[in-house]
Image 1 (cartoon, rainbow, N blue to C red):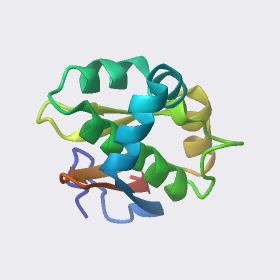
Image 2 (cartoon, rainbow, N blue to C red):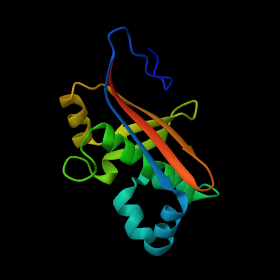
Image 3 (cartoon, one colour):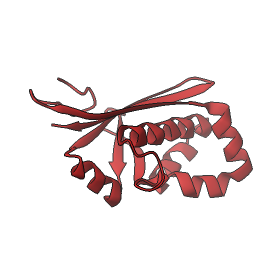
Image 4 (tube, rainbow, N blue to C red):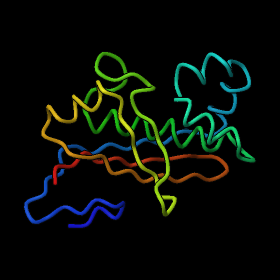
Amino acid sequence: MSGGMGITLPPGGVLLGLGCDLVEVERIHGVLERHADRFLKRTFTDEEQAYCSGLKHPHKHYAARWAAKEAVSKAFSTGIGGHLEWTSISVYHGSRHEPLVRLDAKAQALLESLGGTGVLLSLSHTETHAMAVAALVRS
């Protein structure tokens, strides 16, 4: 089974969790306009802020990352809060510009405690919506 994002699951590879999220881009745009500094610092890593802020329509990319964080937290079955912080999950790009997930130490330990070896992620956005699908895998 191929993950399509640089991780190939051999025969016997296991899908440990699956999560998805859909968010209205305008919702994130509004929060950015009203509470930019506080919202950015609380929700997005420096890496994510550097990437999104340099783009023509940053709010669309922040919305996709918001959806990614929600999707990953749902794949963990924890949500954001006790086990994962917003900044526990960081989205960056691989060599083919594919979305990849970087976990902080606490989230990485949680993944390993579940027997996981990686997180697969798919993102998309339109003018009005951003979505993400995340899978926890053991290869």
